[in-house]
Each structure stands twice: as structure tokens, then as C-alpha cells.
Amino acid sequence: MTSTITLQHDDVNGGTEVDMVVDSIKYGWKNISKRTPTVNRRDIAEVDVATMENPIINMTGYIDIDNTTNKITQSLLLDFALASVSSDLVLTIKIDSPDGATLYIYGRPSTGYDATIPRTYSNTINVWIDSFDINLSSRVIKEGKIWMYSITLVETA
Image (cartoon, rainbow, N blue to C red; front, top):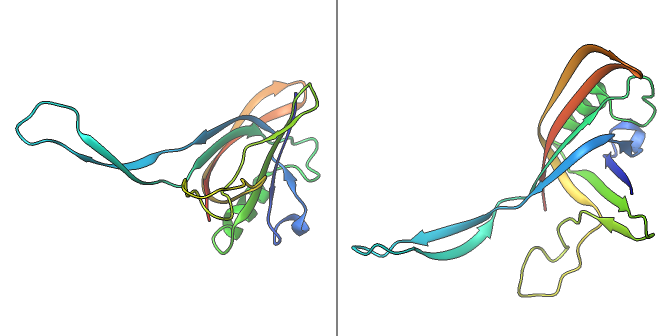
């Protein structure tokens, strides 16, 4: 199984997609609910799911210091973080399975996350950078020094 995870913004890397070189991805969804307890009664509360928080995508990976062409670097992370303040970044998470099928981590449909109407999910996810960290290690490995990164992205409309 192979995967292609890219991040793109028109003002970063000449608009060319950047390979994120990812080890792991965590996609998180959380409903926002209103719980109304019954007064003077020990029982579970009634729950009314009003809406949801914006989905969160956490990724960890490494910066390949020996091959930086169109791959994530510390300076590109900074460029993406600055660019995401003014307009959305475009994240693509594509997985090619051994049987030939192509799967995606889908983004918000153009009609929104409304459960009452038909929707077609997008193959790309509009995001902004909430935070990122880089962990540098002087430990020598076959490819060179280890530069690990983690990034938290928030899906936007």
C-alpha cells in the first residue's frame, strides 16, 4: 500500500504540491452536544447534538534533509503557516491499496456536513495550520540526521 500526502498553497513553493513525508495520520471528529440532566433524578441526560467542531488532522513525519525537492522542510512549514493566515491550504491524502483501489481521507462536501441532504465528499481538504513542532535529533541513522515534525491542521469550509 502506498500513500501520497501533499499540502498546497498558491503562494508556497511556486504553487507546486509539497510531499509531506508522513509516518502517521490521525483524523479526529467531535460532535458538540447539549446535555440536559433531569432534575432530582439519577439517570443519564438527554443529548441534543447541535453541531460539530471542525475536524482535526494530526500528522507526524520526517524532514528528508538529503532530498528536499518538493518535500516538506522547516522553511516550507513556516511558509505554509504564514500563508494559512490569509487563505486555506489544500491537503490531499490519497492511499493506493494493493488491489488497485484508490482511497482518500475525504474533506467537506460543497453542501456542507448537513445530514439531511445528499452530499459528495471532496478528495481534498481545505485546512489551516493550528500548530507544528520540529524535533531535531543528533542521532545518526543511515540517511543522515533525524528531523521529525508534527503538525496539527484544522479543516475549514
